Amino acid sequence: MRNRYDVIVVGVGGMGSATAYHLANRGADVLGLERYDVPHDMGSSHGVTRIIRKAQYEHPSYVPLVRRAYDLWRELAEKTGRDLLTITGGIDAGPPDSQVFDGSRRSCEAHDIDHELLSAAEVNDRFPGYDLPEDHRAVYQPDGGFLVPEQCIIAHTEAAQAAGGEIRAREPMRDFTPLADGGVRVTTPKGTYEADRLVVTAGAWTPKLVPELEGLAVPERQVLAWLQPSDSAAFDAENFPVFVHADEDGHYYGFPRHDVPGFKFGKFNHFEETVDPDEMDRQPRPADERALRAYAERCFPKGAGPTVKLATCLFTNTPDEHFILDTHPEHPQITIGAGFSGHGFKFASVVGEILADFALDGETNHDTDLFRIDRF
Image (cartoon, rainbow, N blue to C red; front, side, top):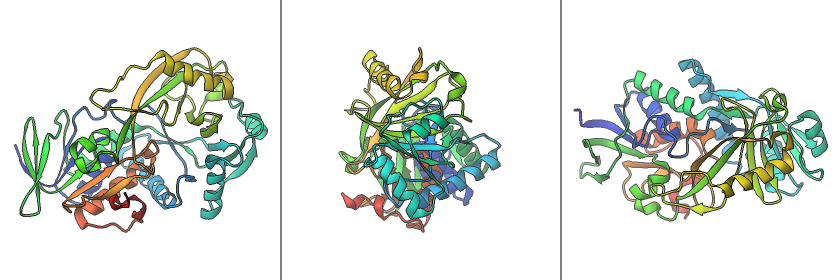
């Protein structure tokens, strides 16, 4: 068994698989370690579909990154022959003064993003699956759509392997030790490995591996629902844009039918349950289903039929809901990608590029000031 590499990546989910690919593609000798399977449904990078959109009401710094992410997703799809990205259009809706609507509008205007401003009646008329409250407004972005997360992870992993990367599943990192020569030693149940650099992209398990992030990257239980529509065609991808919606009791998001015979949606932060990822209740509960169904009945009544599927996943939230992309505050040979706060997967392709930059060069040309660890 080999035990020396240029870079070890811990966690081969959405972010880690992309990082392993970018490192291997630049000629680095890479080992990726994953505690579960590749891909798996125990963390944050599963669930069949994930939204991608150019307007970023969360912060202006995200817009250049998502534009680069679109390019990288398309390059990866062409390189691997996998169907990763579907364009459906996207709706950001809510009351006129809501962060979702007003922030999206301002983002489109500031960054010259193609968009339309629609009333709720115009949305409901154009897209019959919708039934938004009459006083709500929407930003429609024709470039919005969804990624298929499991296929994205497979594509990045296969591309990393094709470039010489080594990926080991079912092999969790137990601990790591910075070395006097500036490298790092990693111990797993199956062996000990050394590398010049370490990248930690372990999702909800990151604060267990990097104690400095305790309280700064907090796991949260999330639940998704798929319900059978009464009008199936209204929820097909060509008729139903992905959405983010500021409703009366929080922010929701949803998708057209894809691979599961139902309308998929969820609520950001769901019941705000912070959890230990090793002890979380992974079975959806009746209360989860009732809360989600109530929203569908209000705003998507044609999609509020019998339950087809329920699933749990994990958010890992930072205090300000922005990412952590930085080197370790005490050990510059360690790079961290964490705290993607429920809106990170769309950026995985470019996050991998950024983390590879940090690991190989100690810096990146991307603007990552918003994501520095020392902001806390």
